[in-house]
Image 1 (cartoon, rainbow, N blue to C red):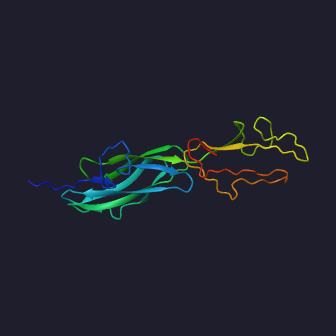
Image 2: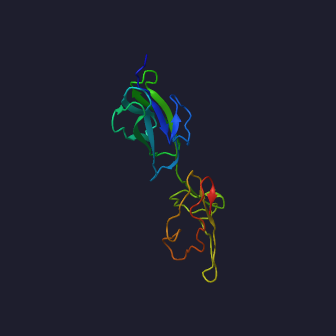
Image 3: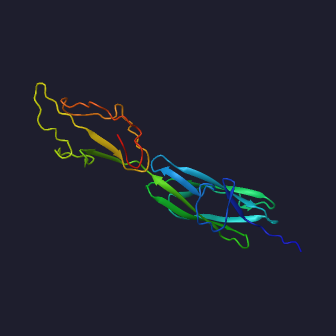
Length: 212
């Protein structure tokens, strides 16, 4: 007796993905790796193969979990030919928050014992985070109250021959390298009595605590 039946098989990056796989991995593209929250996205393409002896009919492909994942290219046909036929679909990871995003992909088909076929995916949203300090005291963005503890108050200086210098530190406490994109990198507005005597020397500033 010859059994005629469809059979679903899934691969990512030419690596087989088991039904129920709950361990995302970069090798099979189920781990979408680090992706910037601004201007960054990653697309992964997965292949459905039918090694069975009858055509495989695909139903809905859904993603349950983080909204950072979306099905951007569905299979071109809901029928996968028998004896090695294939169809592909693509998932895009486009995070807006710098956290670990997870989801489960569900593939409905007429495979008798793997319906739905499920597997987990994940990706890490990353972003730079600037932190400015004077004398190791944080200076908030938009600070309009110069103070002595954070060196934003320069105190008194002689009109003739007197100068006061302050050094400030830029730190990147984010998970993505920070690019200082201005030219020059630091500019001043207001009184011409103030000048930038030394520009930051490092850009991009390394993630996770790099400084300049």
